[in-house]
Length: 97
Image (tube, rainbow, N blue to C red; front, side, top):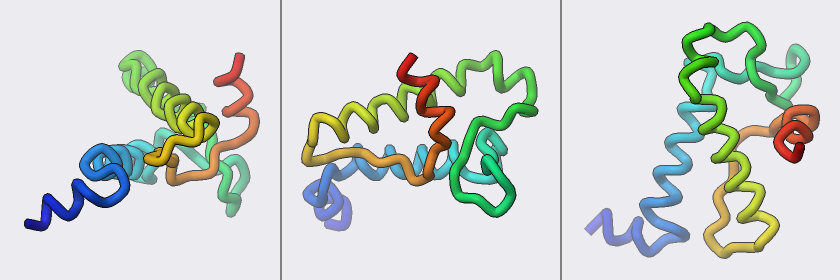
């Protein structure tokens, strides 16, 4: 019964999957993103993350998630997915190029 309620509410499993994935990827545990300035809330990719992570394609995957979120926001989809962090303008500008 609990799962059926989640399916009806605003995107259901897709939204929940996206939210959990973003919390993990942008969370402080993985240290993939760091604040642009100390105490700030804008985030940018961590320039000193391990080479294994850079080669793994994880940042490319995160870029696709961010792009999907931006695309859905422009289209005005009713089940728009939102990234739970504020990304630095310099990072977002690189996605457009």
